[in-house]
Image (cartoon, rainbow, N blue to C red; front, side):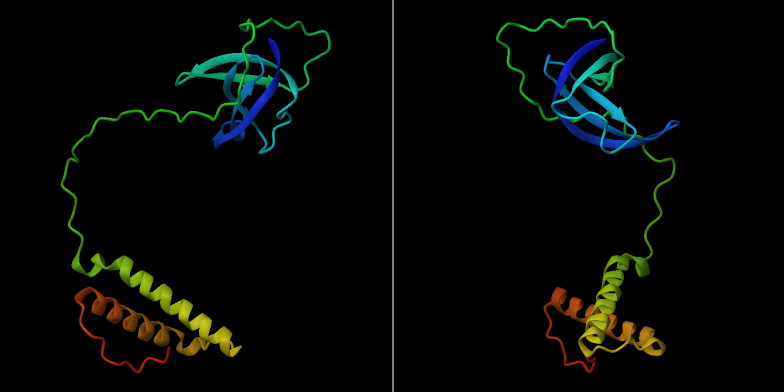
Length: 182
């Protein structure tokens, strides 16, 4: 077990384990050790400036795995890390974990073509969302509740007008006046 002061502690993601939800951090210690530590809380019981005890429990993707004890028992004997004379430890940003290359495998069957009706799904979805935003804006401006019995009729009318305007922009054809009240 070693003892050192935390110089840098940077959040590095979170994950679930059999022991519960864990938060990962990249720690840089004053003695030069850099490694990954896990805590059960978003704010661990140790931080920058704290003197802690730690063990190196392994390595993953070239990064040391550390187990930090914020409150070591009195009388704990610590090993000494050798640090070059005059070395200055600077906080370091965590390095991204390299992606594991996966071989490309052709699917057993070719993907099914998308039906023409669904090709514009995103455009239609966005037009309906925009229509809902327009209705809500107009109702707030009038300080009136939404007319629920006619909501779907109004949504469709406004969404169709938005789609028509979108098509007009794509084809560069002039838009004929519409009687949609927005």
